[in-house]
Image (tube, rainbow, N blue to C red; front, top):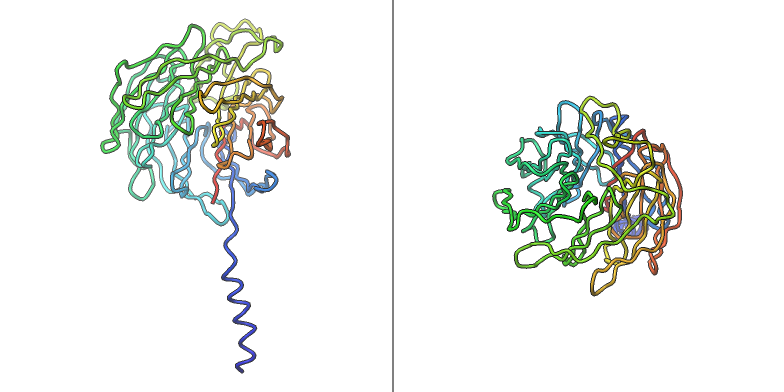
Length: 385
């Protein structure tokens, strides 16, 4: 009897000694379908495998992930306007709706503060930013505790890495707002000065902050330029350092024009038109991502369907344009995996999702594969477990 138990015990111990396999999940919001597509990512190759779709609501668009990775938050831009909390199953990646919080307007961007206790959102059509509390269990259930009017077309809101300062872009007013943030109360207070103007005809859109928190980068929708600002570590104010283009003259694109807001009754977010559109192709930049090692930046341009690669100088944060890659039609959302090895790109006018491997020496992209996704795919989140 004793001898018979020994092999079974050895097998059990060997099983317990094997660590659980790490998993990476990718989520894409499909505005026109009103759902969220889920995938597993093979971290050795970047290949994606679909794991199903979760119902959300028409015009589901911006998303963000809780700091503890337990929840995915998704904004629904159709009535009733809300942010929905989904629990993430770390074994399967399945999403389960746990609650929802009312939003004061249709929000084009969503992010979290560094404590995970507050969600920031920005409304392009409502010209405002808002702060919603997150309950102690990680679920957002309550209405905004603060709504702050902004300049025209608020498009993005992000906290810096110290969580003391918050920045919001205003595309229509061509500026970046500067706030002080109190993590105890969740309240925003205008910094001094309250805003910093961009050069004319740029249209600041999405914001990225360098891993060392020294620099803030804004991709401009109307010019394709990236503005580099230095962040004052004492008071959080920005100082303009540089403008670097991401759209070459050979593209044939003219300077862009601000787009009409997406109405809550729309059936898709992909077909917004430029104010006074004359039908000529114009620059329409969208997103910006910086690798975790701070060496490379990527931006998306929707009219031509391009991803730009730029290198970042280690000491100065200075950007240098390298090249553009053709990608999915109208790429609104791009996302790096947490290790900076892969880039995933969704296209609002494509029903395929692209995954790229990043060359760690020079940042160059190599297509891994294209995978089925929903209609008007626009926002991507990637989570490692």
